[in-house]
Length: 64
Picture (spheres, rainbow, N blue to C red):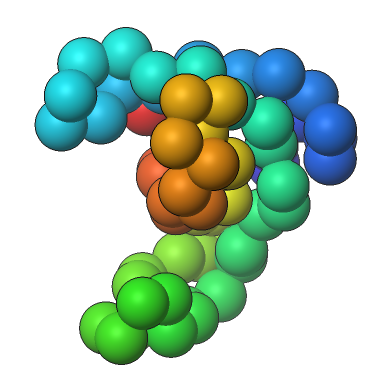
């Protein structure tokens, strides 16, 4: 289970390196995001993070 709550400031690895942003929420089941279906499980959730730099919202696995 995720250890972050909405509004927490987090950082994660992405294509451009390390990115900081605001934790928005968590997905614990498959969901559609920007077109394709993203895979998420209760044991491997995906987290939605809003970038501080671009304000883009992206989904990342919790381990990232």
